[in-house]
Length: 107
Image 1: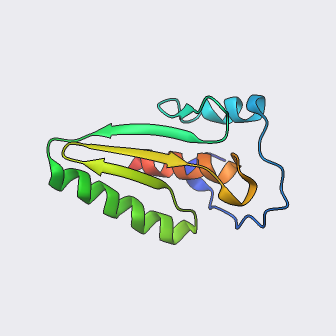
Image 2: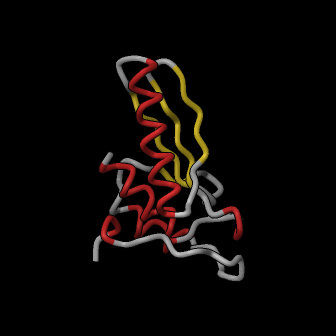
């Protein structure tokens, strides 16, 4: 099953974060996302023609995040949006982060 076909599952905090090698295997399905140096988050920057497009993207991702119950961190402005995904409950990466990344890529 592809990541885009999956739904984020609530993380209770007792799961172990993915190891670097586990994360790298999943990252192959979302190659435009980078695993952070510490291996605890996924990051990607998006470029747009103007502020309105950046804001529209943030709003669409926000709606998706509410549907999935998994919320990224954003920084955005005129022509860009920087997205960071991590599972705060485990202070690291979970399959949910990769599911969200794949779904965001479809936007």
